[in-house]
Image (tube, rainbow, N blue to C red; front, side):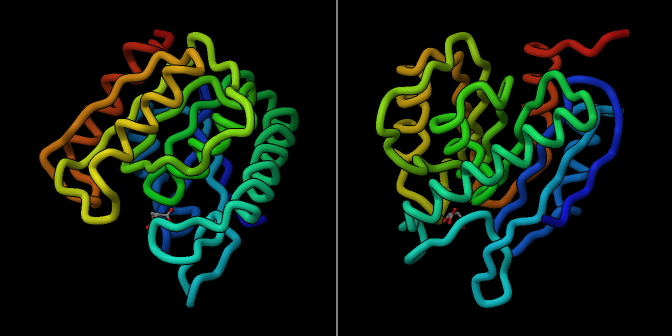
Length: 200
Ligand code: MLT
């Protein structure tokens, strides 16, 4: 697996790019959210007509669930391995679009790997076979009111799924579409400081 790793402070940020992106895309965002944090940023391994993603889909918004489950476990194993290698005690996922969807899938299928998550333009990736235990785990979902990639109930349903599992979910709606902007960066950095205050 191709990835970027930059050593730094704890918690580390696991950066997961959107469809058509790569491991370098979210590095600037990671540096904005928590300057100096350790960054782990893998590249999605599914090639969709030249666009890289983290799992296969059958159509926009329709996921290949078998592939999603398999790749969620592969990503979780990779993260656990890197965490051990670099002594990363806590890892917060920062995912955008397809990257947010696999981060949400990891929360649902492999609770315990992540200590928190920032999900930008996320959908419900799957219905977990049994509810995970995410007691007290902080999760920020930032949704776009005019997101053309998903129906408006998706962020709400994802929030409900995570809340039912015990997570401390903040669902923020921004007056925007699927792409990211300064309001997302500001909200994500503020949430990070509230939930994981930087050591000074
Ligand atoms: C997905 O496939 O994960 C979603 O449709 C978002 C996207 O990557 O476009």
